[in-house]
Each structure stands twice: as structure tokens, then as C-alpha cells.
Image 1 (spheres, rainbow, N blue to C red):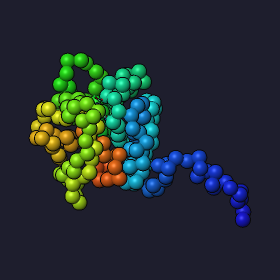
Image 2 (spheres, helix red, strand yellow):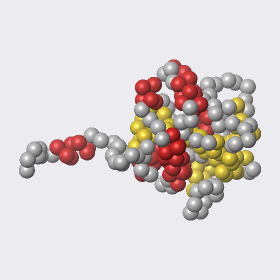
Image 3 (cartoon, rainbow, N blue to C red):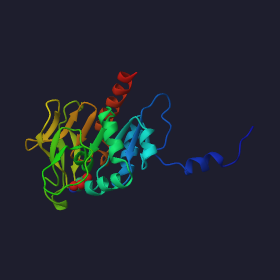
Image 4 (tube, rainbow, N blue to C red):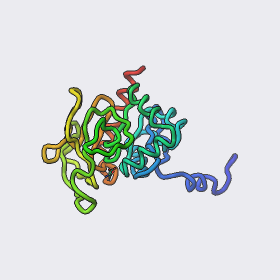
Length: 224
Ligand code: GLN
């Protein structure tokens, strides 16, 4: 066969991450902030729902994506690393310009405008909520639950809350509460910003990632 090199295709596949599959066409480019936290599971989930995922570690990479996921992890660490990487203000600017962002757990904390604590930590902001960190207790109080999320069809989601935050107060009129636990919002949306207090990426349930990628598609076609 012309140009065929034995084993080449296998080697190419072996060197490629399992999430790095070309979705083809006009798949939205969705980055995952990869400074700290559970990045890989988000990359995989985004790939499964037809986005073109990539890691965002540096400022230049932020310019190359249509949307961004802020993963779970430790919000103080992620915030500090954003400052060190010189990405906090550029990211705040992209949010102000309308870039869709999906924050999960620590990512929800980073999207908050205010925190229920005296210590200060760097925040991206924009979600129009006040958030309380570790609102359900410590690591040992982490739990799984079935949660009905508005806008997500097909029954409740099976989700994990791991040292999870929750919304203590909604600060803006246009914040939509999509799900609550004990009357506290745990999934909220404000325009192109989506946040969940739990980790949707650790289960096989991709419906919230699908909802986000639909939001990204809608925002891209509105911008055309
Ligand atoms: N408790 C962590 C924080 O405050 C968030 C936990 C998580 O992302 N699973 O940043």
C-alpha cells in the first residue's frame, strides 16, 4: 500500500490521550482549566458529548477556546495559581465578554461574587451568588444523591458531593436555580455561566456537560 508504514497508526494512537478524539465539523472548543483539580474526567466527558476538549494551563491557551470548565479541586489553590499564571484578569475579562464557563465544586466557588467567610481568596466572579465553602461538612460528610435538575431530561442525576459548597444567597435577578438540596441552590445558571456544587464528571452521567455544550453552541451561533 502506498505510504503505509507498519505500526505507524498504532503508534499514533498509543501516543494520543483517550479524550483527544477529533469530533470533526464545527465542534465547540471547550477548555478545562488545568492548574489543579480533576481535569481528566472533564476532558473525557466533554469529548463524549461532542466538544473539542483541551487543557488550558497558560494565557495563550485561554485565547484558543470558545468556553471553559473550571474543575473541582481546591479553590484557594486554583485561585492562587490563576494569579501566578497571570490569567485571573484575562479570565474575568472573557467572562465579562460573555464566554460560557461551567464551574463544578471548587469551580462554582471561583465563579461566586462573594464567599461566606472572612478570609479573602482570588475569585473570578460573575455568577451573581454568595457561596459557602464546605457547606455540607468535611471530607467524611461527602455524599452521593439523586438530584432532579431543571432543564436536564431523563430523570434525576446520580451525583457526588465532595466537600461541596452551596449557594447561600442569590445576588442577581437573572440567576436561575436549577436544583437545590435542603432549599440551598446547588446548580445555578446565569446567562452563559453554569455551576454545580457537585462533581458531574465522576459518574457516567454526561447530561450536565451536554447542557453546557448546548449553551456553548447557542452562544457561538448568537455571536455570528
Ligand atoms: N472544598 C473545596 C474548596 O473549598 C472544594 C471541593 C471540591 O472541589 N471537591 O475549594
